[in-house]
Length: 289
Image (tube, rainbow, N blue to C red):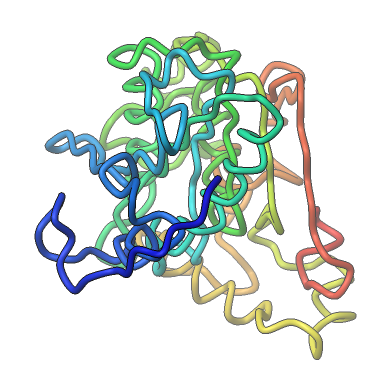
């Protein structure tokens, strides 16, 4: 896309007071098109998120007309980060796709953070946002690519499992203890179609933190097994025993544990037909990925 010489200002003329993402859209690269980018969507008691772009940077169109719709779930251990931290990355990715002749829209979920908001809050918000994309926005599920990094990748898989084994609002994470509960009768109902593609970047797949790369790469990665154990405690606060020896009720939940869940997950039913997973060989999460 063309560069511009227009300088950014202290106030966004389209949105008023600056928000975190405005520091990207008001840069010389994007400032002429600021009105087309980074639009907030909020549904009370349901979800909020941002349309980073809708089909084009320069000539927006309804996302249902896009060739591809990226539904992004940010990382940050469920307790930090915001969608705006990924705005520049995803805009540049969109530019690359647009330059290849593909129209692309990007929607990033702004889910509530732990410890104030614990699981399954984030799962319900992701599911509500997906229903919004399919229903209110009229986007075909096969056009949707769900993507997430780190904890966002964990949420992406939890969301996909939830499409096959939906949790009711207010229901705690499932476990063998809950398997005979009345709500489990719905566990095999496919209540929403799964998306067309999935991208997992440095995914947090197991809350056991026992893979060899956790020790092999302990001196190479900013993350560590103790840190992730504390993070798990933040977003699973009802399980006070979250330690390296996790409580049996939590550590095998199919909505939380993706390497060794109980009962086993039917990944052929859960996963879309196209999947990409990436992790660096110096990361502690490498072996799990």
